[in-house]
Image (cartoon, rainbow, N blue to C red; front, side, top):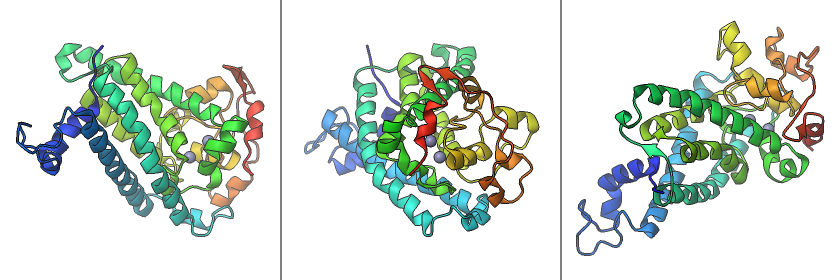
Length: 311
Ligand SMILES: [Zn+2]
Ligand SMILES: [Zn+2]
């Protein structure tokens, strides 16, 4: 078994730029007075925690702020279910969770770095066809696990103790994207780390796909339902219109990128915003809901999940 992580790359670049100086080390790591070199586990843990907390704040606030100003339809803030001061509340939940999530991520990353992962750096190690094939496998793998982890988070006990803070926002804004209980955020990010334990992933590719899902998470909370804007893609892609209904009606549309697992799991609901509703308040009254029949999978039935209503 051998380990490496995407964070090795980030750690080395950050060390070159400023972390070596902080620890009193030269770039060759042999200077007298070097408190801990890059391979020291305590330094790695400290550095990773610092990188995750600061990086996490930036990866949350920058895309959410840009989305809020350029895509988010501010009419949502006039919706009956909008909470006064909601943006501030969403930021509070997200920023309070981040330090705890970072701690959990640090432990997982140390495992990847020091024990086992299947990251690789050279495309020629597995060839270009595998490089592209791994994108498909990675997206399918994470899409499946994110769906089921999210769906299990709607079981009554887990919903009450872990997932409910994210459903406080009946109508979300881009700032709700990371406003989770820390364990909730960690669990929904876990499939990304599990993937790299199970099959070979190019490190830079993984980093790009992780950045992409971070932006997608912001995007599905902005209520801007023209992404995607093609009819066929709307059938396949779980966009903001689908996630609007997840926040309003709870037990539908748990998916990440695609609607596939919602269709298989019997939790798919055709978005009310695409039923011809032009007015956001129309989504309070779903009207005739087109969804597939109730079904059970992995011991969790859609009917059982009805208990996960908020409050
Ligand atoms: Zn949910
Ligand atoms: Zn959400």
